[in-house]
Length: 150
Image 1: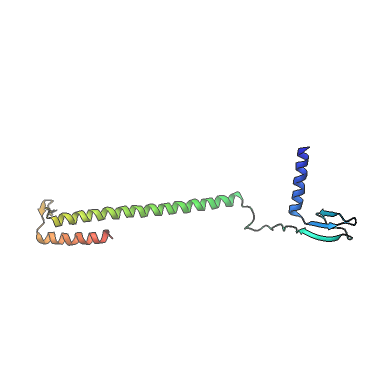
Image 2: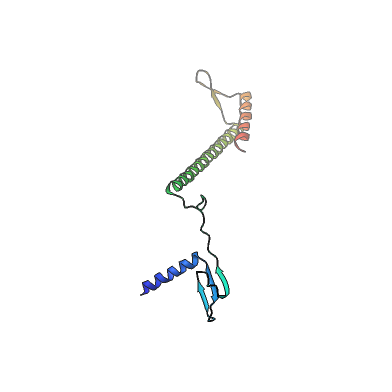
């Protein structure tokens, strides 16, 4: 009994939602509701709900198939991977810049503190930097600090 009533209610609701609904007074004066137009002798006819237009199949409102959904998913995944790769590259470059900045600062600090600096000659032997070479190394270190530590 309950199942039959539920089916009847759902069927009535679906016809109201899809079709037109009319209200009128019949010959005896009672109010009638129907989804069909009233007879010719009806009084006070009102159209309560107009029929909802069934949308034509368009690409924007049509449900997407599996192939289209899969293609869109693959595009989103590829875009995310590309963005992640770009971010990782930018992070690596930032870490390298910071490391080079610290190395340049430490070398400049060592040169300015007067620490003994050596260079290798053509035979691979160590030679201490003279004053002119030390000044040149300081200038190069300052340029490196300016370049890496922006």
